[in-house]
Length: 260
Image (tube, rainbow, N blue to C red; front, side):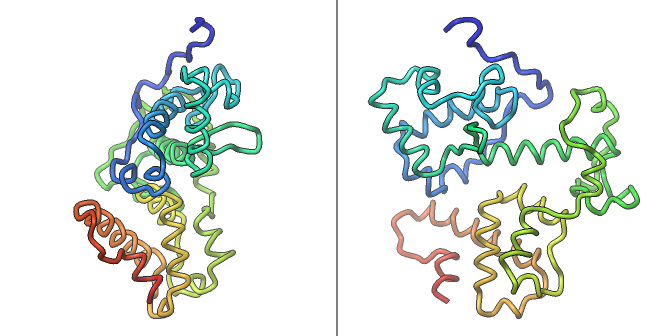
């Protein structure tokens, strides 16, 4: 490989590794449909995405890669690559944005949350100690201010926008597609939406919210956040039990909701 093809040195000093969610990897239905070889290639692609100049996107020196260039970059022969690429795209593992960039939805979302938390730290850490900061991401109560972080590389997130931001993708989904949830006494706040996304992922949380919307007795509940949090915890626990008891015919939490 020529020197100019080598990825740029990663400038990130405080985050040399990306988060890897072992349970999500083991239980994600799309990944389970992929061959072991495809899952191995996907790990390599994730590493290149993390080292990219724009985290989560598969780019080299600021240039988008075509499927054929990705194949060459990974050193794959055409026959194997055709099958692997078909699985990655067919099962929605790798995605492409309107500008043609291939990316990992989970990594892009995690990086966005990381940047938000970083900006919160620059502004003094725990938003409970700051007035008019109800729209900031909740931090741990024992978090200390981090003035040293101001010397790190500039963030693409505008700190004023974080304070003023009133909406979130989950809240917008509820407003547009979930009239039953919109009527609940305690609606989902921005902080709560970010924490649900950060803990359980956007797709998983959206799925639970849609299940709640279609649940016949949802009017018996009052809080969107507490109900979704409880359902997400139960679904996660159910998935863990199913992993431990592979081969059993016990219905999952989601199946029970669908059959109710």
